[in-house]
Amino acid sequence: MGFDVTTILSEGVLKALRTAGLPEPGAVTWEVPREAEHGDYATNLAMLMARAVKQSPRRVAEAIRDHLPPIEVVERVEVAGPGFLNVFLTLGWRREALREVLTAGEGYGRSHLGQGRLVQVEFVSANPTGPLVIVNARAAAVGDALVRILRAVGFDARGEYYINDAGNQFLNLARAMECRLRQALGEVAPLPEGAYPGEYVIDLAKAYLDLHGADVAKLPEGERLDRLGQFAVERIVAEQRELLRQYGVEYDVWFSERTLRDSGATDEAIRLLRERGQAFDAEGAIWFRATAFGDDKDRVLVKSDGEVTYFVPDIAYHLDKFRRGFVKVIDLWGPDHHGYAPRMKAAMRALGHPEDALEILIVQIVRLLRSGELVKMSKRRGEFTAMAELLEEVGRDAARFTFLTRRHDSPLDFDLDLVTRQTSENPVYYVQYAHARVASIFDFVRERGLSEPDWERVDLSPLALPEELDLIKRLLQFPSLLEAAARTYEPHRVAYYLQELAAAFHPYYNRHRVVSDDRALTAARLALVRGVGIVLRNGLGLLGVSAPEKM
RNA sequence: GCGCCCAUAGCUCAGUUGGAUAGAGCGGCGGACUACGAAUCCGCAGGCCAGAGGUUCGAAUCCUCUUGGGCGCACCA
Image 1 (cartoon, rainbow, N blue to C red):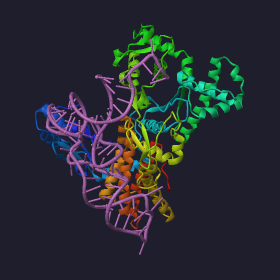
Image 2 (tube, rainbow, N blue to C red; image 1 turned 30 degrees about the vertical axis):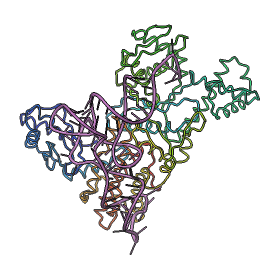
Image 3 (tube, rainbow, N blue to C red; image 1 turned 180 degrees about the horizontal axis):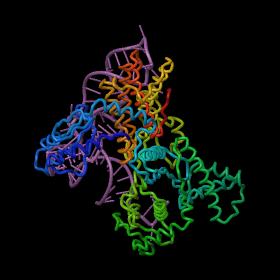
Image 4 (cartoon, helix red, strand yellow; image 1 turned 90 degrees about the horizontal axis):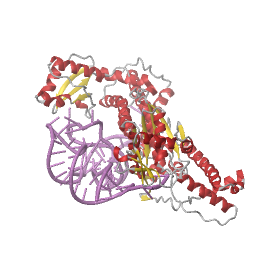
């Protein structure tokens, strides 16, 4: 971005400390105060230093203020409260900052925090044993927004979906397929223990028969199950993929567990742990020394019957991620797996990856309500509520935005009636309406035969109302807000910010006319309104929610 | 029993590496459309931040304990 005031301010403060004979800190941090009376930027530096220099915080702050060299954009500096240093910038500075929003346009908010570093976000990764459900929709909303936000702040972020097309879950699906196939051929075949009861498997079996006939029944069991299972997985994954695409989620990589196993990566994972002395034999099994890396107990890698546990391909998979060059791997898991996180992190540490290279985020459950009453979601009885139905009922924008109005690790009540209602009760329309209003103002300008001002040259000095200066201030907070959302992996901050921006814009619109006979004032206000529109659009885009011109 | 997460307005939740007077939506009550869109706006009411200690210039935020919830603790995935 153009001129970054905080670095200029920091330099000034450091210079002041030097001339005042005070020690220099490693860094000066600036925050944007909540209250306008507290200035544009504030630092708590004096309070942090007070103890070390044995002076009262206010005295330190006063010393800094008195020795501060003149800075062009600084109107005045105040010492306030227990020792805050409040900096008030000139109105000219703030207005010129608005111009930066306008010239940056759809690039406004982007930064280079990530320095192009490669990070991965793996999310949803549902078992390919049936349709996606509501929690998957939540994970998809969070994961996809995270990818978009990380990209905006300069990371090379990739979204990935892990397909569990091997192992026991796969076998259970294959057995269900086999049974349904027999039933379709008229045999009396009971569903085996553990096989998936879902009715969709009946349709899949019929589809297989239509395409490939019944010859598969003559194959040996292993090959037979393999073929049927793979057919089912391909169909189910294709459906999941299409549904996610409609939801606005495009993955960079769909990663197959089967290919991982076939490549010998699982054996290699065990070998690497052995080489590092972190695997040992006991009671006829092979164990990972997880307790050496913070886990509660050691974990079995290979069972005494010779089969690997689920843990091993998972280790191999994560190892593969790091081999592909990711400096940061972020996994979104369901709450039922949170106990699994310590051993996964332990395994990565055992294999030489830094503690924080793997980040595991827990996406909490979604409780579905209708008119305030809980909708039961029982997978066993096959009456789970599918993601497809959710999209059909509430739509992509409302669904995504609603999922992003909570922290990802907080349980969420999703009230279908409330989310469907197109009123002020629903925050997504509140934000979108603000954007549509901006668009309609420019429609009005065009209808009048007026032309848009040249943003490079327009005189912004007519902007003087408190609401106008407040709106600019909010627009200027957008880039640092994105960085905070990226650093903490909390996309919901963007959703809240947008609601607050809309909540500042609507009253302004209601109280003051943008287009008037005063040409200079109109041009300046159009610039402000355009700025609001730009940030609303960019912000909604990062959440995967549309920014409509009309509603 | 051990571990993780949580407790903020009637309800659902925010609260910017610990910052100045704790916010929003919904719900409740009362108002505003002959000018750019009323899916909007204005006003009122609503709080012992579960409780008790501690850390310090300062705590909803960090530490300890208590109470009350959710989840996890397999040679399952």
